[in-house]
Amino acid sequence: MQQLADWYFALVFFVTLLGFLVSGILFFVNKTDSFISKLLAGFMVCICIMALNSELMMTKFFLNQPHLWRVAFIASFCFQAFGYLYVRSVLEQAYKFKKWDFLLFFPAVFFTLTIVPFYLQSAAEKLVLIQQMINNTSLISREPESVLPLGTGPLARAIFGITTSTAQYIMLYKWKRKLAISSVNQRQNLITYKWLFYFTTCMAALYVVAFGLIAFQLTVYFSIWHTVIFAISFTILFIIVYLLKNPHILYGMTGWLQQVTIPATNVDDKMASLLQKTLEEIPRSSLTIEQGLAYKSLLENHFQENKPFLKGGYTMGDLSRELSIPSHQLSAFINQEYSKNFNELINNYRVAYLENLVAVNPEYLHYTLEALGQLAGFKSRASFYAAVKKKTGLTPAALFGPKNTESAVVLS
Image (cartoon, rainbow, N blue to C red; front, side):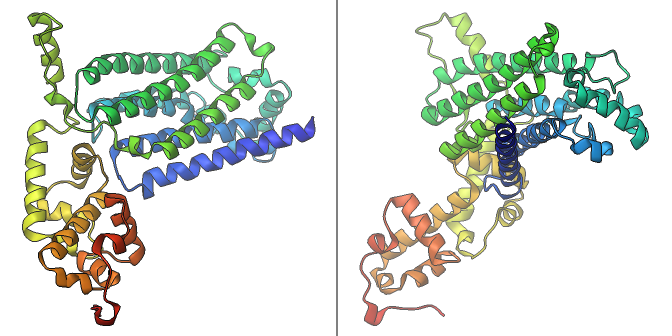
């Protein structure tokens, strides 16, 4: 039995560390550099903290570190807010918070304040209460450290989670109708929509289970912490696997869904007018159609006339300064308009430039692959190879023809 418990702890610990790694990639390394990726990273960090903290509660860790007990308390309320904001922002193609979004984090702040008196106690005083809860784990879920009546915090957490999940389902239902009548990147958007539905379902299942255990006082018969740990670990693993399988969901909804027109053949004119009005509502946190058209014209004219992408190490910051467009808006626009991240877009322009170059002047076919890559702004042969392969399905050697190695041109 102890060996099984050790394997269980190791598995959860491994999944949690993997979740933290993915969160870091989404926030700091992810090439989409988008607002929605950062919201998903915030959600992942919170549930990873919860999983790790819940697992440590089943050990004697906090008997040695009593001041760390409940330090992750705030995360148990924040992850619902991050989850809701993520789903809404993907659907609305948002690139920033709305004015009153901070109110979603009010429950996290309020309920954290209710256990401040416990935080201020001495280590000896904390140890007495911690030892009682470890000896009787059903007390943990009732949160006796809080100044509120026993069980108030967990019940409020479950209700808050069910409320946000319900709001997510309502949004998904409304957007399902929009996507059904849209021909804009329909396949990719439907994949993203399914992902949001599965994501919301995982969250809702966790809340419903927790609410049921607490509301019907089933914690006497079932360990709420083992149930929660398992559910959270499954959610973390599910998100990681789904992202690996469908990385394009990080771009969110693509295309300009506000442009959808409704055929009047299947609905009466009044309903068509009402739905069209709904579709044309543009949240302040999203780009308008007019902004999208203007940004597209600016970007494509700039690339055509100045070809800044030929500079090695060209970045989003460089393009943002050149076009005088905030980088967060520019990133959102590229994801939405081209269904690509910045690097993919730049590399596509570079490959297209070389294709045109060798077509106009076949002399460039005598350049080495390294020289051609340098001409287009690629910093390495590997990045050149990957970009050509991804855009055309061919290798650079196949695309640009056999080289005459005896007369090959090498750039110094």
